[in-house]
Length: 356
Image 1 (cartoon, helix red, strand yellow):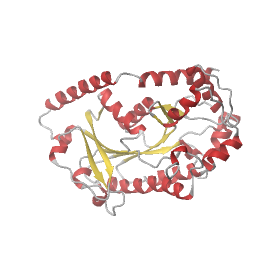
Image 2 (cartoon, helix red, strand yellow; image 1 turned 90 degrees about the vertical axis):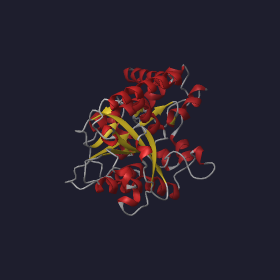
Image 3 (cartoon, one colour; image 1 turned 30 degrees about the vertical axis):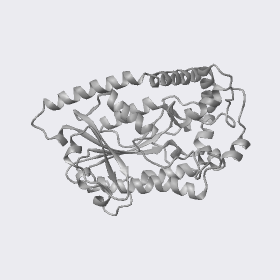
């Protein structure tokens, strides 16, 4: 009951924090930008590039990318005592040179090519030299299938889809790793998305039997089971540099990010609102969640904390089972949660994805 109350409180706070009016957010953002300009104008001896901590961001238009950018704008974040500037990295078949006019902006785009052979063919040197960090968030959606009805998520993990899920993470990460490795003039931070799925489906199904086996960053994940575990393993391996490298690598292991703007909560909301919510399978499997706002703040904290390296879990501190989360969500919406979703139905509709 205590955990359910914690989860319910977290959901309520997340929904309320995301329900603020756009006008207020816009005013706050403009005020922060004015502060940034005043800060820059007080340091005339530095060049424009040196005045900013510049982040190259992939997946900038996704759920996590948008939350991260909102948090940077809302909180006037600084890293190494510098205001943060974002370069939104957009995939293309060639690279794009950065013009001087772009460098004067606080938020601009640069085209990169994940299929390039060398660092210069992946990201133009004029863009790469601007960056203090690369935050890599992009990857194929694991919950949708291919084709016009793919959004329904019915048995989505075909052979082609699974290959796309893997390639969209490992190929792009390995390409950006080359860009990081080629930077010899200054150390860069490389923050790469990963997932708590690396701990294996068996952990989340069976950990409730023994709290001592709950996984953390020190857990050996070399033999964990499941497709998502294998994807996350290869994803993290693709980011690794030589041990003597002076660059910082962080593998951000995401839980289920909750936001009314998309993701799992957007899909669950109408079902629960209509009174159709219920436990999935046994309800005892763990549901590692985090609100989008807390997730963005955790990413900012990771950027600002150079001692954080290697795997870092981005999840709420108190684990909840599916049954506890279901009860808390129903309580938030004042709706019953009496309609269970049995295991055989999950497996029939969603196939391998449902099993994990």
